Length: 339
Ligand code: ADP
Ligand code: MG
Image (spheres, rainbow, N blue to C red):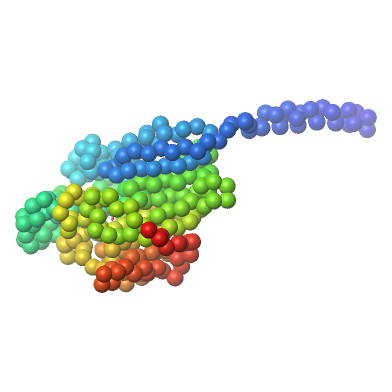
């Protein structure tokens, strides 16, 4: 009995030592950081609460992402695939590919990353629109079809070597997910990642204050200088993307955003849906679904949201005014902007 009692101080000491050993370092002060700049032909703006500036890690992640999915980087994986150079696909590429294929199936081909030859055609069309002929559209359209590419053993197999991929409609959203994961791994609990209008948020802007995200009012804006808002949503944890047809080549001047093309007709879409904001389980998915919505128009987009288990906020032109249509499950605190 006595010997057992003697054990108590020893065990207590051991517990104290163990507690000291596993105790997390304290005293690290948290600060608000804001990293911003240009990436993937657009802007980025990243706000977070952390004990140090994570910009070096963020820039490194951008570089790795660019080396996978940028069509403007001749050394990227996607460029190699497009130029039929033998290359192994990597994790970013494969993630993009699988998600793109899923949204293609869900949207019955309205969303299609093999749209690249048409994008190129209409891209030139911006400057020399008279050069785009029905015959050229037909021959580009003959190369389109998400069912004509597949991934096997880290290789892209194409039915026709002229088939090319364009990840622009998913990449910004995916990059938001990548940065959000990076911040999460670093223990960051409050952040807002915005890459060209695609957004991932977590936690709060400040204690008790949700993040606030503006939805742009879709007005003719070829220069991208419009800062009028349609609405402001207040959110905590969200993945949200917006696609719009208000900064496109129908208007002369500097082309700020490329166009949305209907892969099934080969022509840029023109209908009353001006802007599609989608909330989904990942930003990559929200981004693809927003583009798909722009191709489909508001009625089919509403059905797509249901199929994809996503939420949609659509702005439709009605005569000279704008009408907002939301899915039934749109439960975000949304204030109309008064500007
Ligand atoms: P934004 O966020 O700039 O509005 P999106 O996410 O809608 O842009 O992506 C538009 C880009 O997607 C175009 O520039 C083009 O490269 C590509 N794209 C156009 N039409 C389609 C389509 N039907 N399916 C997949 N990608 C498309
Ligand atoms: Mg998109």
